[in-house]
Length: 287
Image 1 (cartoon, rainbow, N blue to C red):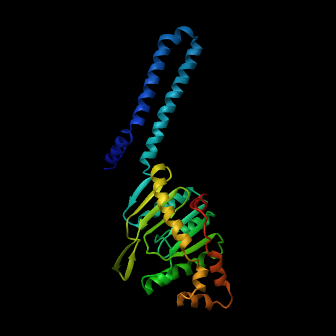
Image 2: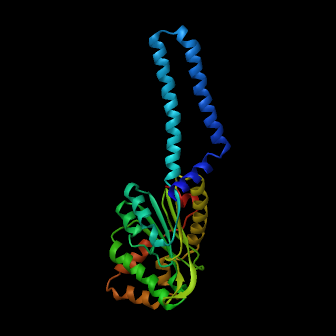
Image 3: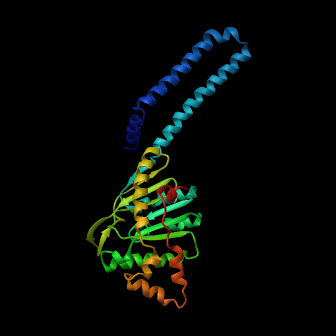
């Protein structure tokens, strides 16, 4: 099945007219130069010059072959993939962070976590990435259980990452739609659905997901533009944690959690992670 998939990808890749013409031109050039060498050059050049010319021709031929092999490797690396659920992308995300140190990372989800066992936020923090988290406004959650879920994610962020000062958080009030993660050269995107299942009404972790990396320029550009447009609009229209806390719609659980601290540490932390607005999408997402 894997070989058949590669075969179909190979046929699709080399069915492009530009690729076919490039290959034909390369082979014709090599054959033509070879004929010139065999018919004319050997009668004009010395033996040493002929050998040198042949080596140059060989290197040019190898460069053409290597280029096409590199194209095949990129093709077979499956830079765009579909996953049966969000948990299935763990290895893709971990593998990405094993060899990448992105300047910025953007997460959009219902609770502010990703629903995966290996936290991308933690991995980005370890690499000094500037982290943006866009979560559902707990004051506009569907039910009290969902409100608690969002607030627990916020409290966990305080518990484990409060010393990291390069995290920005905002809450969106619109109906939850997409969820995902984007770095400089990786995009993981999924969607939310609504159904009462196992006591929850918002389902996201169980839904399929798509991953695409920047090796696949065209697909990465299209999906990134869609993700960035949605993210930018929700981010600038969203409410910061400190704005939520100081509003008359602040959930009681959040107010109690902040006020339980005898000093202003938690309130100061909410203020510190409150993300600024951006003038343009380019300004927000450029590395």
